[in-house]
Image (cartoon, rainbow, N blue to C red):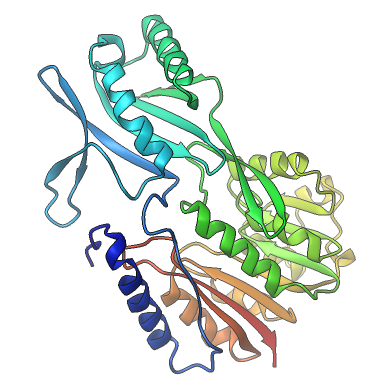
Length: 368
């Protein structure tokens, strides 16, 4: 399904269509009224990447039509944050006359924040030398002198040069609290900052009256763990990707939250540990006694493929399940198991990706 052109005047109509599609998909299940969380109609994406086209002395960004694969020039990109749009022309104009910066440059990636930081990665089909470093430092200084809070990365095959850090620090408002999150280049983060805040608030509301501890699978950089920690005595969270685990540890310290513990394990490994099928040294090394946790609630935010059947059955052991899904089809499939023991008491649509067919869902399940 092709993306609809970005037009604020049609935004509400496309959101209504998504809500109808979500309700139709789950029509055979007993669901409460769908809660719909809208996105800004434009400037909602905190990250964007563009290929770079060289044409004589000219240099400009391009994208490809996903259906025809034809390229088209991009001078502004309404889906991306205002910060990215403000920076795009200034960056390319500064690089045009500079051979060291433009030679064999083929892609530019932007990662921005609601809090005003931006990270730019310049990708090259050549090795970067000292001259590139000097020119890149001057470029960074020039753009920061124009009011940007910017860091630069140069990338080539087996080469990464960082000026001065490879992450941004985002600040997300969750009800009356502001949480700080390190977001590292090339690591997963929620792309739509405004909707990410609404997702966090929804999850906090769903678990408001909780008792005991929280278990979270697929925790990423601790995005939900930190927001939910206020509602539980302790939070035990698992994540497999090493950069995400490191960011989660950074974020725990930055927010001075003392009741969250992150362990590097896959959901499948954790299931084996919980069921006593295997012992894991990393649990012992971190002094984690799974039996000491009193987890009545589990939070899951799995990849697009959803949860495997064994994990679903493990998840059924908890009184309450908060499930965030970036693929409602695999969520529906998982509910064939989860629905045997639990009923859906909250049902939400988060419009993370306006003007596309993608839908993000949230459900709260409680034991029947």
